[in-house]
Length: 356
Ligand SMILES: Nc1nc2c(ncn2[C@@H]2O[C@H](COP(=O)(O)OP(=O)(O)OP(=O)(O)O)[C@@H](O)[C@H]2O)c(=O)[nH]1
Ligand SMILES: [Mg+2]
Image: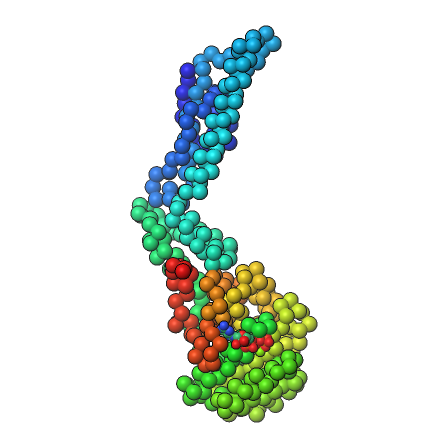
């Protein structure tokens, strides 16, 4: 009997090799997953080691003059072979499940946070390429590496905010509330002269909502009804060191509404245009929002409603999709307290920390 060892990526590949070299009568004696040597082995799929054997002078599977006895034995042998193959393939699947357990653990963890698959791939590819040499990889070490990878990808706005800030985004994400928080922050805490403009006269109660905040903090409010009214409103607020502009929530993908908003924004320059997205938004929708509002040339990002989710992938997803730096975050309905600046929020820990 000839006994040989084979190495392959999959059982199918291994069986092909065995069939070519030992012939179709070969039987599998044993198979197991073996890891490649070195640190990269942690990230690489394990190889399959297959031990196969064949009789030195094998009888053909079936010949015209074969007796009942030979046929019967060959039939049993074939059944046995297929049983062994099935068991080995089953073992192969479960071995893959348990493979690179720390990498898989963190991949699943980030998937549960709804991190964009593109980002996930990018992060783990970078880890694969960067880490060389013998490192004892543990779940904790992986967590530290991932924290760094996430931190690197969370772009934070470093520049001073512009005097004119325009909040845009889908309906109900918290634009007006965030603007009210900032108005209070700048006027009460920073003692700046703040003025407000709203171009949202579409929704019933929208002007009143902002007027209520303006009256509480005692700030001038300009209601603009058409793009040509923007210039005069800005002139009336000339004395203000900061002007915050509220806009109507626009249906994502509604080109007419977005173009109409664009005609107001073209009179509001130079300004920071802040795309406002709720942290409860799924990745596919974030992509759609970032794409739909792109024509309004937003250059900043606001993430709202962090208190309403336990999945924080949206923070990184929004930075990735919009290519805009994170400028403000909000985590509640309280005006002005539930407002955060990016330096106050540890995004890597939100994503890599242990979820409860
Ligand atoms: N939980 C939570 N709720 C928030 C947050 N920010 C705003 N909201 C609430 O979300 C709802 C909508 O807020 P708005 O500020 O009116 O949203 P908007 O984007 O201006 O809405 P439209 O002008 O209609 O497009 C209100 O009930 C807010 O109190 C937040 O950070 N966390
Ligand atoms: Mg609003």
